[in-house]
Image 1: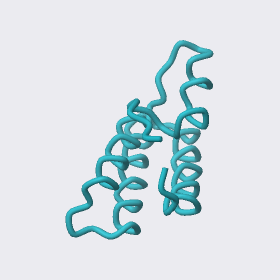
Image 2 (image 1 turned 30 degrees about the horizontal axis):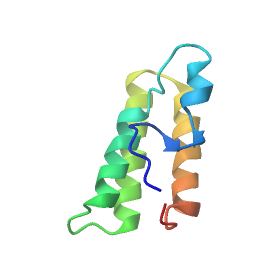
Image 3 (image 1 turned 180 degrees about the horizontal axis):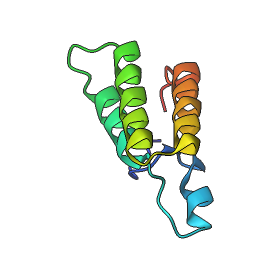
Length: 89
C-alpha cells in the first residue's frame, strides 16, 4: 500500500500525530518528501547517496533553525531510513 501523503514516516508510523497534537507540521517534512521522491526516481544515485542527501537536507534545515533538537531528529530519521529503507512499502 503506497502512502501518498506528503509527510515524514509511513501511514501510522508518521510524525503527523506527534506534531498534530500541537497543531504543527514536522519541520523536516520537505526533507522527507525529497527523500521519497529520490527513492522513486533516483536517476544515477544509489540508496546510500539518496540517504546522504536526505541527511544533509535535514541538517541544513536544523542549522538554519539553529535547533539541536532538529539535529538529533535528523540523525534519528537517517538511522531509521538506513535500517529499514530497503523495505518496499
